[in-house]
Length: 223
Image (cartoon, rainbow, N blue to C red; front, side, top):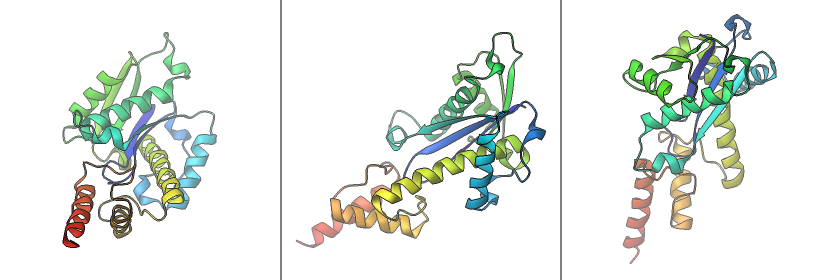
């Protein structure tokens, strides 16, 4: 399996979701210590991501799904995850010899974002513009496959950088996940101050809807 794909940021109430694909003909060429990004410290993720990006043998693709796309009522998170995985694969192999017309089929493994892993693999393959593509998908692939683990590291570092940039502009936003008290406090204070959600909020998420509803209720109680 020369490529692996994973995503980060599917569940937060704030910010974008990112998918990453890592392509390498010989997975044994990956740096030591590659594993699921959730099992690594942020500092170690940054170190490994830099090593992966600096290796000329490795092709990396990244796809971003913005909050506006996530809030679109015409789609759903499973479909967006399919799109993100497909776009990341296309980005990874766009300038790669593996995408040459004379090449054999390109194969790889995705961390399944659907309860039905086979369905997820089929949808990614159908969405991807690469003709000679074989996609497999498994739950927990980021633990089992070093290439998917590498992709999970890239995706998580991209997501972390995205959240850090938001924090630089708007102040502490936390991780963006609904269970994060800093994220909830940020949403409450932002809505109280501006009367609306921040532009990077996933407005369709219940956490964001609740923050708006609470602010409206507080406003009514003041009259």
